[in-house]
Length: 429
Image 1 (tube, rainbow, N blue to C red):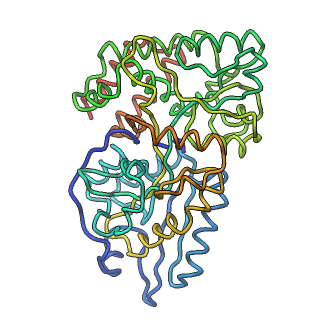
Image 2 (tube, rainbow, N blue to C red):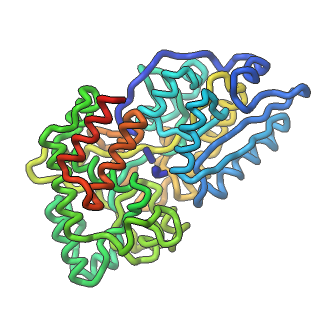
């Protein structure tokens, strides 16, 4: 998720690799952990980030149903919290070995794995890819080739507590950055913590800078910077200045710098328990609020990230991503069959869990939650899409974005230092 969503943003690329039709014997010798045994049984290693509901309960049910229907297939599951997963996968990637099926947000991280020859090219193997929406597939496309299977897609925006807004005298969600800052002041005046933030985990904070960069400089400028490896343009500095405007208002909950996202007392719990009026988070936000804290129910609302006066970015340009799975090169053919089952046969279950948004064309009609519908409709109307920066860019660059923005929020870096650090990381990558 989070970290979840991701990226999530520029979709780069490489040519296809070997086919999944590789023999099971060859698959066993390709360096992965799954494969066939002498009796013809196949063991798949599956890494995911389903450590919170609804995935925590739903994913095991889906894998169990699959293995029950395919008794010669065993699925060994490893579920890790977002940051722990990234660390483990980075170490595993460095060793040249990946699990058969693993979580991916696409973008630059996936590109590096493809460049290293570690990922299966699924383009010619997914004769069912046309059943998936183009936006859900886009993070996993590299040079027009498909390297991942999406199960969720969405966008980041503000989830807010209608009751707390009303208590502060706020009648409509802010449409501009200036209005957002004014609302933060109103909430503080009413004795309400305006925003919940997981300062310890860093990735939630980068959402603010990324969105502000999109709104001030525009989506094309952000995409160009990824190519030129130069993030020092005035628009990016201004993004940091606007974020500092917010930080200077001290809008976050007490102890936010040490707070996790889905942990007890963390960002999601603070929001779910009604102790903060807003959080900037992806489509999974409500389900994690409920899992870590409580369900706000009808009091929960959603609004897109505001525009910035004088900025060239539009409100219809969205920042986000989803979740998907990639296969290691040479994975058993059963791995892709499992993913086909996971997505196509279980889309209704994924949507009914209220934790995911549709990737199958036409499935959006199944949504019943009003906020999920708003997110889905925003995606349909989107005039531009940017993947999470810590996934869109190479890992070292994405990490620098997270680290530098976290330092800005903590008062340790200036807006100019943020752009300089990201540029240095980009040129060194």
